[in-house]
Length: 289
Image 1 (cartoon, rainbow, N blue to C red):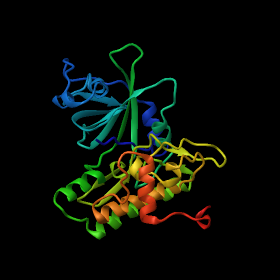
Image 2 (cartoon, one colour):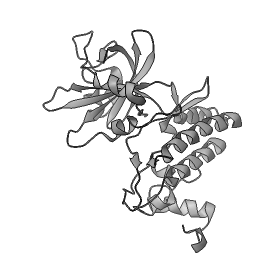
Image 3 (cartoon, rainbow, N blue to C red):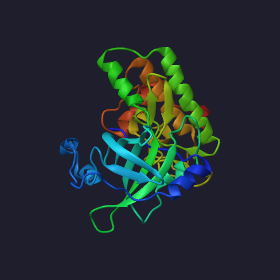
Image 4 (spheres, rainbow, N blue to C red):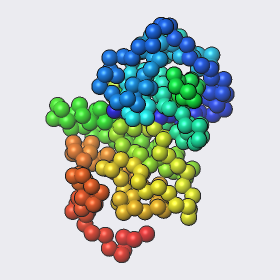
């Protein structure tokens, strides 16, 4: 399942997002698409009030929903089309008024050609009392790198080395931009790299775990998907650097070249560390920062 995330570009994006309005629907019946039958209750709730053909408004623009292209425990992503035919992705998540939405905040700070762009955002009330949903209107790319990995594995094919270079070059460009601003993404994985196989375009998305790191300030260590988690995170370190993102990209590089993850501990952090030590060896004092 994929969940897209996106950054806001410049003052114009902020202005557009501030002018966001509520959503309207073409159909009066609030039916749930058939895809919801196998989804959990949280996703069913997210699908309420929306179906193919529903029209949502954001600022002066209207978007017609076409299909659900991603879902997870906390949000869903619709592919939608504007009146002028441009395809976008709209991510819908439940808004908790007690906290600022980390993804929205971060996306309003960043602007880069290899980071998904936030076009605008709007809020819409749910059926239940005090229930509000945040909608992020973003760039749309047709695939995730995870999807391409699965396709290649199914066909028992390896990635073209030129394609690997193209995708990872763009990923490192995005990270160079973020890290120069002390922003750590903290959830780099193939699912969060959106791609267009026809153009080899690649953009980083999903900033729900990202954070501006401050020296001497403790951070959560239980972050990043386990198979892409750096050793310092596995050891429970609360002070770490943007290097944890680089480890994640290195893991992705090996996965693309070999067709499988380099470190696959069965079901625990300890076993995952064992696999890392088996391959890379036990660190010495000289390896300490």
